[in-house]
Structures are given as structure tokens and as C-alpha cells.
Length: 472
Image (tube, rainbow, N blue to C red; front, side, top):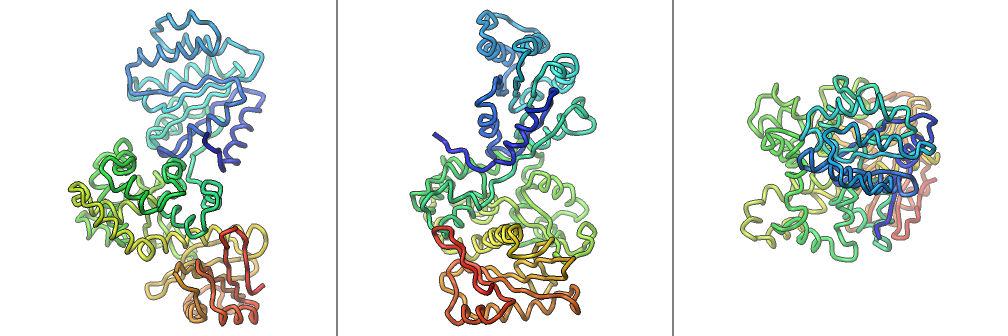
């Protein structure tokens, strides 16, 4: 039996909608395998609900399946033998059944219904306005095709616009919950599994935490019949046209081209053509634009860089996509050895920075650190992994994250302090603090230094999840 982990906030939002005195129309969307159906199943397990999963089939077949579910829901078996020639009648039967209690109606994978009949949004608008709005119903529309859900359920031009009482875009599960998915796994193992699975529930389920991570990569990702061998193609195929152009852009970013100009030069397109692709990939939560945290107007900043936001796609485009030729020939061992040789320095070390950033937000929440803005910083010459800014108290925090096999020494601190001098932010009045993260701990000399300084914090997590902070 699958464990239901995290999603407390999302469940709370759904239950809040359910407790409304009036009916509600709620939209849930997000990329495939992100856990939408599992969330809905958890939500409706103790409620009177009809769940309909749309499929790529004719409308007549969909109506027959809906009638079968309706027969089971109402206890009226004769409905199985009725052929509906429109959607209004079955929805009317649902609306009139059990009017004395709140009920839930779910249509999952709505885009499939729209592909079969483009009039579905208008049909559902009419059903909502005349049947469900006053029938004590929570009506949930769900889908994995993000651009279609936005177009047909959320966009201003959609017939359903203005009817919904709320929406929820489901995102990846945070690293903090990984220990619940992989009990007894060492902390380093949790980070490395996160570096591949990236908080996507289905990926987490597929990777057996009791087996070697690289063996699982070989089984799931490198084999031509592996479940994740073609995953990015499945993910993007129905979301975008010109899938080759999108693949080229993501591959270029994965190879280290983060500036728009460098991406264009690498793949051979005009810079005026790039924004539409970048916007689509950003909307799909595949990439993100970052600017130095000290930028006053991030949207207008010319120092923006693009990074792959999804850990699995970052891994796949860094290690798998460039080697598809070898993999098609069955040369999996060569590719696996390349992954092993560069997995830490070219991939996991960068993901570890995101893990540390999440930990800093947690420390901020419990009052151990103080900032209201957090991000990376660079100026073309120097880079700092994380910088936190507290505009009220003029406190600035500089942090470095080291994913190494040996404890780090005092040189890391002094190098961070040197780079901090290049950051121009309230230089005359600011209060500086330094935070170091290390996957392998700290040298005795560095611990002694931290204990003698009030501005240096060494942060560490043991395999048992206990935090040790030196310097407070």
C-alpha cells in the first residue's frame, strides 16, 4: 500500500473548499506523475464522490463509462444500459442524487475530453450554471496538460472563466520529506536520490531505496525499455509543438549555457525567437530565470540566467540525451560509467545548493536566521551560492554549500569572506553573517574558528536527521 506523504497544505485547501456552504468549482493541474490523482484519491476517500478518469476514446465510449460509474454511485443499475446522446442528462442525475449531503464530482484528465469534443468547456459551463452550482457539489476539474488546463479552465477566454472558486497547481515534493519515502537511508543517499527524482512522487516510487542508485538508474533510465528512458519526450510531446527546438534549448542549458545569447549561439536561432520558448518552459516549471538576489528590479534585470528547475530533466539532459546514440546501440555501461564519474561535480553538487537553500528557509522560519529575500549572487567575476537579505535589519547572510568527500577547512570561510566584499548592498550599515554547509562535516580547525566567532555558522545534518549548528 502506498504511503501518502506531504501535501498537507494541498489537502487543507481542498477540505476548505469542501466545507463551503455553497457549491464550488475547483481546478487542479500540474505536470504528469506529480501526484494529482493520488491527492484526489486521498481527499475523497471519506466522502461521497464520483471520480471519472477521461481517456483517449470516442465521446460515446466516455459517456458509457460515465453511465457505469453513475450506476454504481447511485445504486441504480439500470443506468448501465442507457445510452446518453449528450452530457447534460448524466450530470442532471448526479446533481439530483443525495441532495441532502455535500458530494464531490471529479473529472480527471479533462484535456482528453476536450480533444474529443472541443465544446466540452462550454458544455461544462452550462452544466455548472444550471445544474451543479446549486446542488451542494464540489466539482473538481483536473489535468496534466498544463497549457490546455490553463487555456480551457483558467484562461480569460474560457467559458469556465469566472466560475471557479479556486485552483491548485501541484508542484514537486520538497526534499525535507525524502526521509519519509526512504526510511533509514543515509543523508547523503537522500540528497543523491533527490538529485535524480527531484520531488516527483512517481519517480520516487520507481527508485527502490534499498538498491544502489546507479543500478536503479541503469534499470529505469538507461535501458531502452526502462520506464524513464523516454520520459522527457512523453512529458513535452503533448505540451509543445516543435519538440526538437525545446529539446535543443534544454540541452544547451544543461550543458552550461545560461545566458540567452549563449543559448541562441549554441543552437543557432535568432535571439528574438527565444523568448516564446523560454516562457513556455517556464510556465511548465521546467526552467526558471534567476537574477542576482541584490537586483532591485528583477523583472527588468539584464543579468538574468536560465537554469533547469526540474532535477530529473536536468539529469536526463546532462547525461542521457547526449548519449542516446550509444544507448540505442546498447552501450549502457559506457554511459553509466560517465554518470558515475561526473554525477557529483556536474550534477549533485548544484542540487545540494537548492537543498541548503530550503534549509535556510527553515532556519529563518524558526528564528535562527533572519532574512526576507534569498537567492544566488554573481557579478561576472565572483559567485556566491546563497545570499540572504534582511532589508529591515540590514543583515546580510553569505552561505556556501560544499558537497565533497572530505571535511571542509578554514580556507572555505576565508574565500567566502573575500567574495562577500564584492557584494554591494548597504555596505556601510550592514551586519554580515556567514553560513557554511558541508555534506562531510568540518575540520577541527574550522570548528574552533566558528566557536570563537559570532558571525560564522556551521550547519550539519546527521543520518538521523539531527541538526548541529556551530557558532551560535
